[in-house]
Image 1 (spheres, one colour):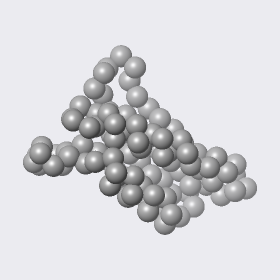
Image 2 (cartoon, rainbow, N blue to C red; image 1 turned 90 degrees about the vertical axis):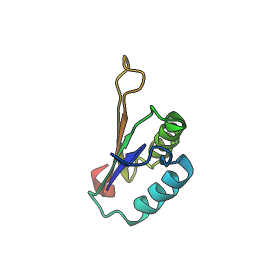
Image 3 (cartoon, rainbow, N blue to C red; image 1 turned 180 degrees about the horizontal axis):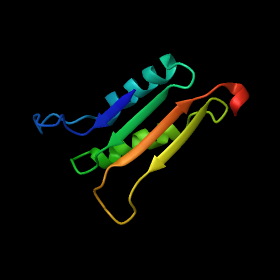
Length: 96
């Protein structure tokens, strides 16, 4: 599953994604994702509320159980408004 947060490319910039609804979608996705499935999130932080939304997503990803999930965060330390990439892979208990 792919989440591309911020604005719809070429879309109305007055309608950005929001942390509360993104969190609801991530929770639902994590419940239905099959083993070896992945949730990939690209969180653009340059828009109003974008950084807070990215932190909400990061907190959710960090809170996934290491017994069932592998997680990863990629970000550029020297680029203030570059997107944050977060990945969570559901894994079998025997693989952890």
